Image (cartoon, rainbow over all chains, first blue to last red):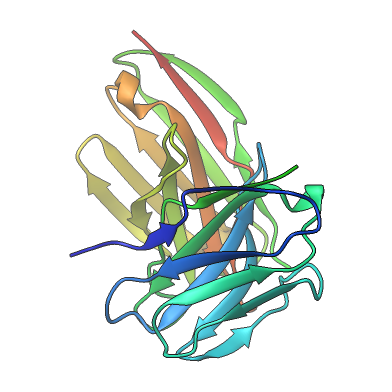
Length: 114
Length: 108
């Protein structure tokens, strides 16, 4: 079946602008995750959804970052007033039910803030 | 949170060679996954292995949960094995925590 998909694959924006990144998980997966990967580092956890609700958002760096999953499937990561330090690859993953299940990753969105 | 250490940080191999990558973690885990990140950035699942031993073709992995480490073995390496290998674990905080990775370069 189809894997995790993310759009756009690349996003270039200017400092101060608002961006939205989309994730479409594997069909039937109730758990969805967002991670951020900076150059030369491993991915870092941002937020975990169980169904429609954010079960753990402790990894979001500040209140400029927000994510939603209104129908328990597609999720959108929203970044307000982007800063150059937000430049990174944003990865989405999904698993069947819980973080202890195998997590499958999408191809990522490369965000560049000029 | 849990600490995940991978070694070595870099590995250069001649095609056909065998190698072992190590992952140490600082607490008990409920999930351990090995990934290969290809040059295009895609994280490819290799193993889900919170304990025990698994094999998939030229790759195999062993996790000794009681001693808090996991090993990834690559046999008869090929140039397509090049990339970054990540170990990631889920502990009591239910977050997948990644190590810094091992960068593998296989030369023809």
